[in-house]
Image (cartoon, rainbow, N blue to C red; front, side, top):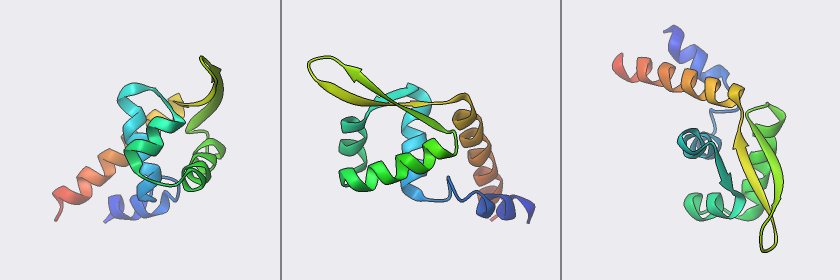
Length: 98
């Protein structure tokens, strides 16, 4: 099954936490680090590690924003949105084939 082979080859989105980050960002385009912490219920170090993998792959951009204090904003890139959509389509194919 080709779709299953393609799914397993995507090491970036194959991780459930990274996939959850992308699914959260997809409709919003941007979120604060603290919001992701709250939604995903992971430690700051764990979230940072996953965000660095996504950033290195070009799926997200990390930016410092300033309001009442400095915060980290996470923005999905065009590549990230496209790859997440592709991953979801492949996942749907695999699930429909079961």
